[in-house]
Image 1: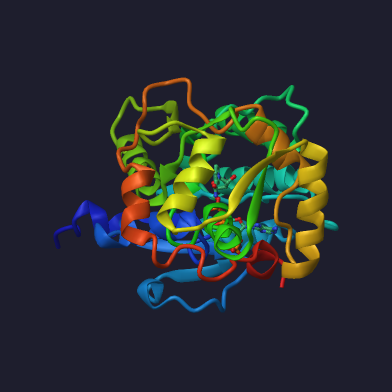
Image 2: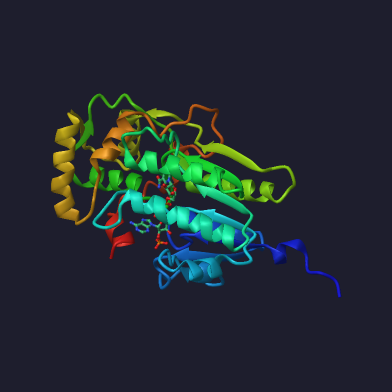
Length: 315
Ligand SMILES: NC(=O)c1ccc[n+]([C@@H]2O[C@H](COP(=O)([O-])OP(=O)(O)OC[C@H]3O[C@@H](n4cnc5c(N)ncnc54)[C@H](OP(=O)(O)O)[C@@H]3O)[C@@H](O)[C@H]2O)c1
């Protein structure tokens, strides 16, 4: 009896396949004829495109179950993380949970991991998001698994939250406040390009000798934040006036908006991260889709509805 082709033997676990980045990674793997399993907090979330995949809960508290959900996997693609701390969901817990996931993967015999991180993580960062990401990267590098760490800048795409909500505010309000001068840079990356880079890195890991790499996922255009907001405003035909305010004033306005939309519009740490220019790569761009072109194609849909982080992840 002949063995099935290699692809049939390849099982990929993609965390968050019903959410944002993980969905694009899972779709890409499925379109290549590969088998996909997901770990999620939302096993009931409907997604017709992904109806063929196996679904498990994250099960961070039950390491035996977690191990079983990873057993037999060729590659673990990990997107799990928090945007902000809320209640018991802290960045310390997110680091702990990711370390549990890495240990469970090791114990289940998974040899390869593609991990979605962030540009410019640092164990010395004052920002728990960037500090926690650095700690997780260290855990992966020290895990003994073959790894590819993909560090995206600011991700944009159809299910995006930040860019979509900037457009939503620009469509509805006469002014749009930005923090300080707005001279700090952003370098948006398209979610499909990020998924392509992640899957290509996962495939490379299957070849001997490709043990570990760390690569930024960054698009071809860099903007000052002011120009980024102006570009979105122009594309969605907003007449909102862009005004410059101190970070504390922006935070105060965002806090008021939180009540209106029942969400966390923007956090103090996100303002600091943006102003520190952390969503930019120091390396040549690795992804090709320009935000400006994508905006031309998606301007009519962008920002029509508010996208709630709390609704997506906490309710
Ligand atoms: N979005 C960006 O602009 C951006 C930029 C740079 C780096 N990244 C990184 O890219 C990765 C994916 O980001 P994403 O925006 O695409 O994330 P996402 O799809 O919204 O979430 C990724 C995974 O994390 C889980 N998750 C998210 N928030 C959670 C919470 N509060 N409590 C428990 N679980 C939570 C999700 O659970 P469910 O499966 O239940 O939904 C999902 O499995 C993350 O590691 C992020 O740090 C994102």
